Length: 232
Image (cartoon, rainbow, N blue to C red; front, side, top):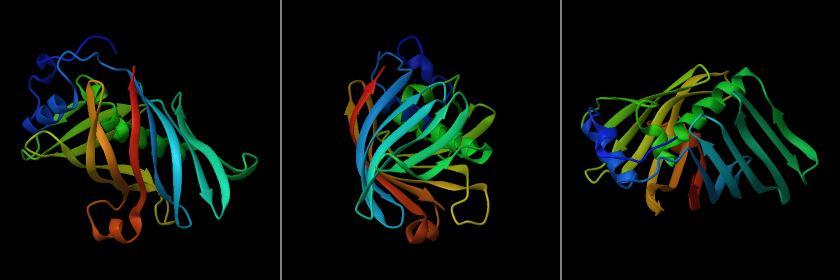
């Protein structure tokens, strides 16, 4: 991406989107085309497991999340990635024994949805023309995003000061073993932090069945804290 953020980028957007983007990007900030994150947290596999990870998100839709987890006392390392429009999972015990390896159209479609939803960590990618914002009710707004033939309608709840408090979108997945389909996905944003000229969610929990009792009971599977964010 090229250029710097200005008020002209917000012309014609719904009020909640204006508040959100104005608070997320400093005036005159270079429009980043990518962000590299480091994070730690918990992911639910057979139980809640601690992890540390690095992630790169690019405005063109590419994404890689590489992490180390201890599961059953054993170190598991691997990545979820979306490169050139193809999604893949590759996780191994001790770096050698495969525990999950998959790359197919369902994984790709789910990975594209994830990468688009995670643009909340790269607010410059939520500006027009890459994002088309729609009217909400003054407390939320929805951005239509697209990459590699997949479209996501990302809804962000925004408080009066422009802080995002929740996000949600339909994501392709199979959260309960009943087969792949679009299901509610999202979560709570519990804290924000400023990294350079961007302010992004720094503590959040996400999962399937967002917006209903199912997320609290069984859908939540990921909690993280962002440690660093380097925008390029």
